[in-house]
Length: 404
Ligand code: AMP
Image 1 (spheres, helix red, strand yellow):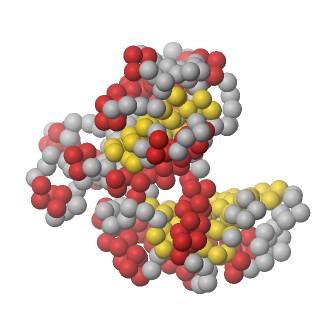
Image 2 (tube, rainbow, N blue to C red):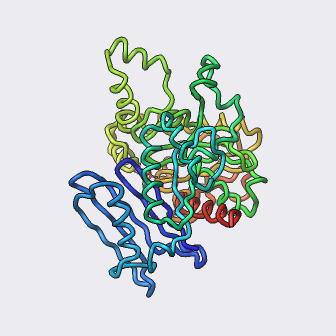
Image 3 (cartoon, helix red, strand yellow):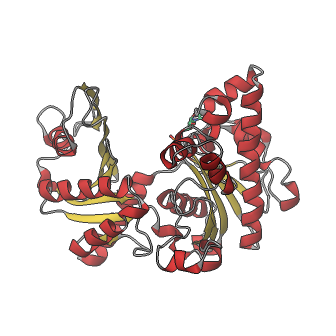
């Protein structure tokens, strides 16, 4: 079965083709800056005879429709095609950012599902419209394929009301759907499954704290395979310090910004989402640069790292309390997978909770799933590379098999 996974953003399309029968991923790529003069497509493939190819094309890509057609030309074309034509694709798995309270699992897309994703646009005004564009184009280009939605919020729908309702007037929840939803669910779910499998267990036997540290960052408390709390909220702004997002702050600061600093709500939104976090604290959102600056004696970078890792440590303690017992802590995504320094700071001083890191294991460089806690530790500390595209492909395959 061949499955195309698509992640459509407002000006980008990330894609990957999976051949599930042969357990290979013949093609993948990224269309960026759609609608801009500096448009760029990066396509990679392994041709049927085994040769790898990489193609980069620059120039304007008018709209998402053209972007998708270019992808199809790559994967079916004479130059670097890996399938004969679009009919070889059985299903298209779409990453959909916001399923709200309407979706707690992967679903086959029909008109009702499209209407429901539209209904959730107020909750994700940038992402859901782009996801819908991807779905509509995909339906026209792959009319015979099943279209499947995999939601980034679905994994968090098991969070109980005491953890997802804010202490605001109750009507804000009931009427306006203001509540915690959580994001990065595809990644948290994937690393839990892989973590359990690495430890030769099933997720239903494990209590995990998962820590996704990319440019966006979030944590989840996962009890026997079910998420019971997460750090992001109604939007991805809440929780951890991120590349450019503030994470948790006193909400009265927004009133202060408006009242005393005379900032408009758009300026506040921009400041909190794009000019805060690591970038706001020390001038860069690239963790490699933050560490480099700190090593050169930059005080702002040093305090930024302390604030960043203290927030994570605090949430480890909070989620341990929420879980009651803990079997494992899992680090993932760009920073979680690649920075022994950040991992060590996050776990420093948590020995009393049974959370320890083995220095040598932590610094050994590897791209593989691995344990970095001392052998025999009660709480395992793991590094599990995330793979959201694979998780979407697996979910898509599962739902199709149960459907047909
Ligand atoms: P992601 O959004 O998952 O691609 O992660 C992006 C983040 O990972 C950026 O802040 C990068 O600086 C960070 N990152 C990637 N490699 C490393 C590394 N070797 N050490 C520290 N941070 C890294």
